[in-house]
Image (cartoon, rainbow over all chains, first blue to last red; front, side, top):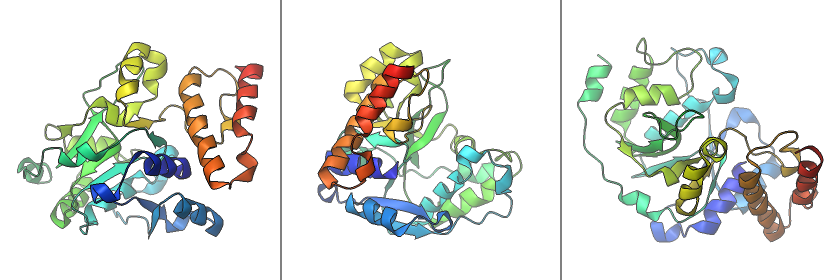
Length: 118
Length: 153
């Protein structure tokens, strides 16, 4: 899935012009084969090998199997070397230029978030 | 801050919750710590859930909406065909939610209401195979897949 997704992204977007790069979150524990990783790189992915997120409050065995590892997505918030990240599920295809998304308004701090976790 | 597009289901083309399959986010250590704390807060994450219900609770009332075309949901193809038709030329990202991409030959065995959208996926896949010359076993994948639709579909 990530192969076709990466291919579609590289075909429809000039990422250097957007000052962006395509980074694939690869679960180390998924034991992806070297030949598969090689193909992923050839379609343009920069591979980012990551351990699964550690969440003491979560029992991963109880999570529905089809999104068992989706909480790994939260790790993207810790990738502070990037200003912005557009996370895209790998069961997708990119169909058109995405450059305008980087100008989506935002950056406001919301104090509500600190209330939620009190 | 985050931005995301509305979710869709068989009963609504425009849910009040967002689909977390496409997320624009700004990395921040402070926000990351807050997310992890919230996740451990009772009621914020139920045991069987993935990230989407949690993020919808965490960012409720305070996320930016992306246009639907940033996360065109395959569920619309069958249940809201006019919405799908309208969004298709405007789509930036197509999300294969209800029928996950597999090798084209393994799709659409039996009833396959999403045939048109999957045909597009198969075309992109085939183009990739031809451009890169690898995944040899997939070379005739589209033909085999279309044959299967004829047989079973």
